[in-house]
Image (cartoon, rainbow over the protein chains, first blue to last red):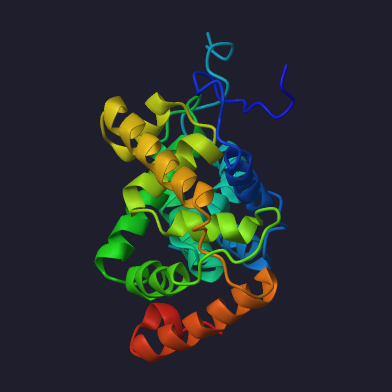
Length: 51
Length: 210
């Protein structure tokens, strides 16, 4: 088993070496803490006076 | 008799919806960042997406993928903004063109910022296909649904995007700045900010935040 194997099924058996970089690029954003602006926005959603 | 065992939650449960929506925000940010390059505009796009998703929550089918559903909304918002030329010209064209004339002059591992710059040189529809399949982990079928096109089209776009990136990387043509990446990145972003401010002084979307 290749530990770096992408989870995706049906992909090419050998991905180019940069493929892992693409995932890490994506994951690096996923792992960022959320800016406060998102918490504010989510709070607004519950406010019945909003929208 | 309630059918609770088949349906994990009522069709419109705002609490569950909000929880799921919150859960996909990091993915929306990653997708948006990959699409449009600029972190601040990407987050604007995500916020727009969240508001639209919230307003349209009754159209979400519980049990289906919140991530796929919201990606469709984000993608549509992105395309609308692209048509309005909100950020395409500022980043994808001007900067991509400029960084392409600074070919890789160093050996060493590829940094994430290199990857991002390389990605941003791809045509938007190929970039999006590669992001969905190669980074987001969607199947070709899911990506086709998100993009509203045939599975074969997605496969073709992903294949072309991979080929372009492979070629760019193998030939040493990664759009890489000759100075340290972090410094170059902030320099690019600084220039972009100035470009955007100059070009969009009358755009309330860009100027009314504080």
